[in-house]
Image 1 (tube, one colour):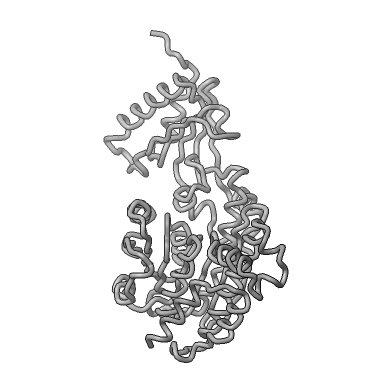
Image 2 (image 1 turned 120 degrees about the vertical axis):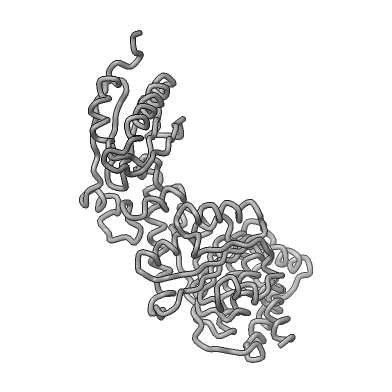
Length: 396
């Protein structure tokens, strides 16, 4: 019988010598896969094999059968990932076998000449899990910017754990966690710095909580991260403390939509967390209120009528006012705020990071909400965070 891919067959002996001690995965792709989203097959490997492992021959034979099948389907670019630093590349059309090494020079090039927290050699599992690194261990040009942005975000977050006492874990609550990408990035950064951490992720959607639990196990954070289905408005502080083994030190919230961000900030303030990291999203509530204020010809709307009469300008003003008032309200509760751009606006308009650190421990009765309330009355708006904090202060 004539083999369809005789050159691939001739490469078999060389491949067997290089894979004799195991491999992490095999990736079979079409030739165009490097430049676009094309079909590829990923076959997980056995991992490292001991010398003289009795399974080695049968595992390799099965791998070569899969390679032939993939080549028959036009997936002729084959990559065998041995570990985080080494991979073997084969083109089934000509049978050339190339070994690629992720040496320090290559790592430095990928990191853009900077000492980044999440290196491609030591954080490969995480980078693949959040979609930045390809299954074959490469980072495409399209994802290179995302890779740098994630590392930049780590540096912006670093002050929140600098100086944390190492005798106990850093306790983190992720409010409206979604797929928990930020949670896992922070857990990885903390692991690399030798800081023990515990995390509780909270979201209304059961599907994303299920995904987050599975990803935590995959990344080795299963003992450090818990995820629960709950609304932020009904979540009890006792449940947060039980999930973390104590009161949270850090609250994070990434792209919680509209007033879900306010619910997250309210819970963080109630819990008295030392630090808050918040990336707001879809700030629509005040835009609607500004529209109503314009119809009533209120004082705030009359300042520059066109800004509230034109929908696009009104939405932009609503976003700016929403986050500005959030800053003032958190400051009124004893926090010091920084407003930072965590990615360039050319990549996403939702690029603001609110970084808060508690500098005064104030009881709800001591919160200085009146000046902000007066300002909101002049503008004709009533933000959700102000309503929530006012209620907490009244109940105290």
